[in-house]
Length: 501
Image (cartoon, rainbow, N blue to C red):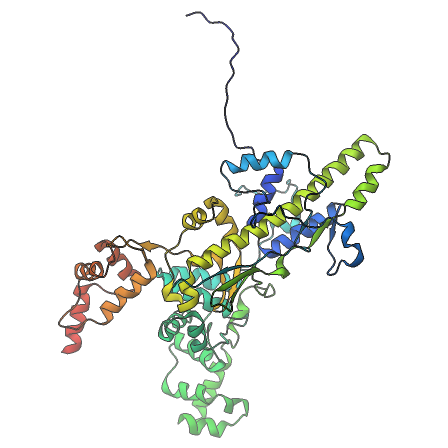
């Protein structure tokens, strides 16, 4: 076979990620605080971007107003899915901008709410790099991060993690839980006993005393950790208001101890930390601002809308661009004006698409988890990224970015969107799958209800669950049992016999 040069034509497809498209995808995963910082930076750098006033007044007609092509929400915006649609998006980006296109994102745009009916780099650093000094500094770990890390180490039970994460969010910077367990349980739709149990678990974390509801409980936790909470000390803590009054005789009477012991107790109590939370993190506490708000609709459904406070309000100043374009400028100035104007248009379109995408994803999550909003945490349905992505015709990576660092305010509290994604257990009857959290709860119910004469083995639990329509393997039952710190049937039977004797 002779070797000779020749020309060949080949047709292929490839994903083109333009810088503008990369920026739009990046905007999806930013939190509202990070987005506000990014927009502020763009306002400083781009002369054609300006902050939209609260009330435009007479100047409003001169600015570019948001327009819709008459389709449904998000239809006029560019699809940011990371599949074949991204290539089409890139082509749309590189196409010339029409003068009548929308140039507002969040300024005057009204994102209509959706209503649903109830359905039941790691490289080493050197002194020669160009990074600023502040960029290489570390920060103190926050109390929230410290408690969250301990929670995931202490338990793998999904329901405990769910309730624990909510409790940790409510703990203030001093380390106290200011809300009652009953109110929290009612809001979550959970048993008060489960919330109390989870709180007791958090109270075993460091710093000692965290999660207490008052000063007496805080000091008692710390004394218990030191193995110093004897009856006399407990009586001392129960009457600690006498210490504030310097009523030494009252303390002696209340505790039954002599004066020397009372003075020792006073010295020990004064060595404790009344505000344990101050030991972690020096950053000011930032209140979580929800990106989405879910309200009860008058017809019994749910009304989902974006929080206007988190939407950047920016406009493209086309009047200024028209004035600059008329002036005689150098070639490099013309190029700069063209690039900045295109960037300004792209930014506001990206912000508009980001807002519509968040609303679309959040609406589908609310629809899928309707039972949670109606009945509480025990009725969370199994849900994953693919289920949401398929329902709204998006890619899983897009849904993942949208749900990262985004929060929703509901009648049951403020939750991160990722909280609503739970594992599933298949149904043995071919029906709807069961939530892993619900299955764990059922296993715990069965074990709690057993008698010393009838201790349930893992195989017996599998039989009972399958009779109830839950298709589960024995090893899965054993795994769930271990995550709940429940002993095996042999150990439980031995414990029951010892207690009987």
